Length: 125
Image 1 (tube, one colour):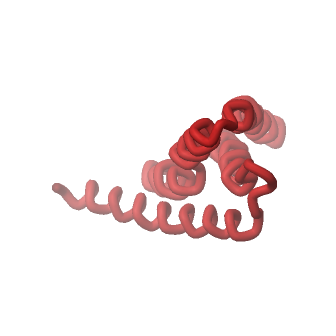
Image 2 (cartoon, rainbow, N blue to C red):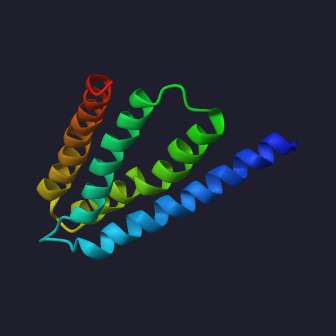
C-alpha cells in the first residue's frame, strides 16, 4: 500500500469520525416520536441536501477533499443501514405501515433534499 492510499484511508477515517459524531449528536437531540426515529430521518435529509449542494457548488474540489467529505463525513453521517434496521424492527413488530412510512420518508424526501441541494448550489453561482 502506497502513501497516497494511506493518506486516502486517513482522510476517510477523519471524515468518518466527524460524520459519526455529528450523527450521534442529532440522535441525542431528536428523540423518537411514536414509532419513528426522526433523528435518523433528519440526518439523512440534512446529509442528502448538503452532499448534493457541496458536490454541485464546489465541483472543482480536490480528490482528498472529496474522499474526506463524501466517503468519510457523509458516509458516516447518513445511513441506510439504520433505516433498514428500523424498518425491520417495525415490520417484525407488526407495524408494516410504519415501516413503509419510514421507507417513503427516507427515499422520497431525501431524494428531494438532494435535488434541492443541487438547485440551490447551481442557482447560487
